[in-house]
Length: 492
Image (cartoon, rainbow, N blue to C red; front, top):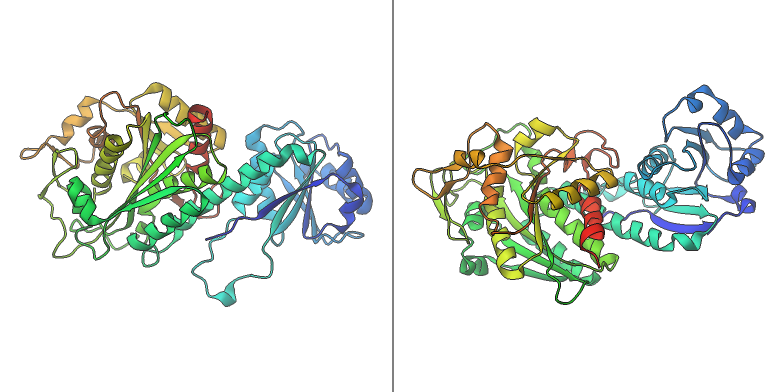
């Protein structure tokens, strides 16, 4: 598990600035005005801060522009970072300023001299999120174990930030868990080891239950089981419950696709790029990260997270194109393409979630289609929803968290593409509107009057470039957005 930088608070004591270790970040707006902390550092450095903010590159720079002053005289800090951030900057700019600090700081220790600046906690959040570095598969000799790292917020009123700092720590743990799960290779994150990782979350107060294959067969989860039957790794469903709200309040259900590796099965994917299919459990990682964050911050909400863990492999036992399988709901499904497997997993887990928990609403997350990547690229998740209020809540929370999301259509005309000649439905509807027909397939397994959203994160779960809050690789997209949604709409 990648451990987030520890977060501390300290009073705005100008006498301690000279002895700060690691990096020290001071902040100024585009007008170059310095607060008392920056003025003190300016005196210590012989006017270097004034010269930095007067430079054209700083004055014309974007919010979050950083000038680095290495090994400043009369200070113990390794570097002083002069960061452009307006005193009343909005939350998103504050987070991005924190990201800029993480990119620029030498080492893993930094003090953010924020004083009474607005959204100080958001600056810390950006710094902690961007400092993520997945190193679990490197040899111990390659790891920098000498410095664990920390972020210290130097504030005029550190006590007032106590709750915000605790929330940042809980959120970072959830985001880092999601990122680690997506980054883990498939020989490390098997269905069995994944279930054990989730079972360990009970240490934080979650109720965790693992349903094994025999139980899944009893429940009639033929769709899910058909996906994993070609693999030696047993299929599982893991149920995580956090009941921190009213005793009789129906929970929010979060459902995640957890295909730990996707070869495509008999409909085998091309070799080029197949190694990236370790991330095909990204939807389940979102659910795990959210549940971890809720438990760590003791959320006053009832939420149940369910993930279907399978491996899609070709073998003599694997499902063939043309096979017909029966879902827990009772519908028969003609499997046209075994590489459209995630929707089969979700269909059964969604139905189980509704039958078992009678949720107030349900949201599923999945790296479901390449079509959504073609449509939205790597900057927005696709949101399909049967309830306008729920859709608005998800989009609003994603926007507030700085995570891109875009609402996509649903419609019976798309469902027509899924008609089967021999079964109740087929699992693909052809290339046109592929992301929409996938959502329409899932809508078939949503009970009447159930507010439901399907979030296709195929383009945003992992990227080949640095995303706004993460280095290239797993992003942890959705953990912060859904936590915010729960705060706004489901927390008492």
